[in-house]
Amino acid sequence: MATATTADTAPSFEVTHREVLRIAIPMMIAHFSTPLVSLVATGVIGQLGEEALIGGVALAAVIFDVLFVTFNFLRGATTGFTAQAYGAGDRRFEQRMLLGGLTISMIAGLVILLLHVPIGNLGLTVLGADGAVAEAAKVYFSWRVWSAPFVLFNFVAFGWIIGRGDALTAMLLQGLLNGLNLGLSIWWVLGLNGGVAGLAIASLVSEIVTALAGAAIILCRTDKASWNWPDLKSLRRLFSVNGDMMIRSFALLIGLSFFTRQSGELGIDILAANTILLRFYFFGVAFLDGIATAAEQLAGRAVGARNRMIKLTTLWALVFGALVALSFMAGGWWVIDLASPNATVERLAEGFLPYAAIMPLVGAIAFQMDGVYIGATWSREMRNLMLLSLATYFAAWAVLQPLFGNHGLWIALLLFQSARSIAFRMMLPKLTARTLG
Image (cartoon, rainbow, N blue to C red; front, side, top):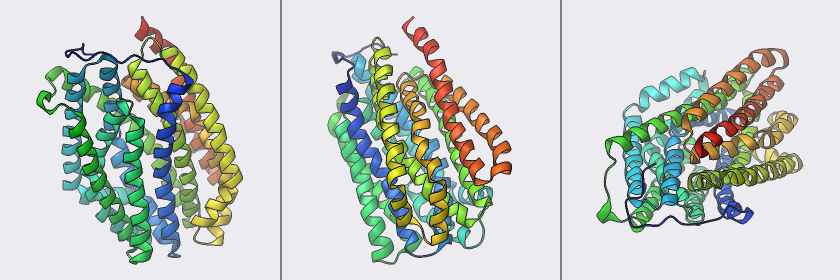
């Protein structure tokens, strides 16, 4: 970690329940709106009464998940470095890593645009899309892909804001993104009869507007006169941490993408039902990401107080994981009824609802540990443990799906989340002792 090079002093703080919730609750509100947009989008397309459209959007969304969440390391690494710099009062290092992240995001976004045709074709081939499902997926992909540079820019902007502990601004910016996406999706699809293309255009416009707002915040809150580009040492560290986090994110997306692909192998009704139920997973992640965000920021700022921070964020992760699981079991049928295109899909989704409901509780520690590892920039260990968990998932799937069908597929996904929780938690004492020692 770079030493302080400015007159800034490190902000002092105490890790308390209030401090954890001060960051976590606004971020829960912000993250909650993200799966809400996806759920509404699924419901809006469902109102058109065609299963193929739901399947097409779901498969195209998998491609964007692989693209965008693979690059989610830009947010995580920016949060970790910013929190560390903020805790040390080193504004120069903070701004240097911010500029480095923004540069990477713009270059990566432009490369995606240049290669979007082969990327789209390869993705749909790997996912086994054909017929009407493939046509719907192509339309959605061909419009939404133009948002790539803006999505990646927003990753860095969000990471920088969160790293500085400004949860309220992050919540408002995320609310702008998702609020626009929500309103425009309904208007373009149902109001203007825009279909799948309208749904994609809503996402594109929302990302552009949010990127402009994020750029304005950065310009207002940084010292432009002292901006300096990362030196060779900073760039080396930036690429090292980003590379490890990219592999970690890619491994997570492989697991979720594989789940969607195997759902399609079981039939279009199962694909539609599992697509709706995955919205529950992302709702759960939204709440748990609030705790993970608090862990990221606090782990980056407080080496000495890290043990207490881990205990408090673990407690709140389990509390919120249990509350979300109970809420899904109590009210999940209503969401399924809203989003299902027909009675067959509704019946299937309700039958497999318990698996989706328990997922937040099983994965609570995994997502909290993500935050700790990101904030402490233990990226190499995060990468290796995620790959181990993914291997466990594939081994479980190979045995369970042939025996139990969709039940086996869901159990394998639950074991994936459990393996993450256990592996990350078991490695933690060693890493903490190494840091403090």
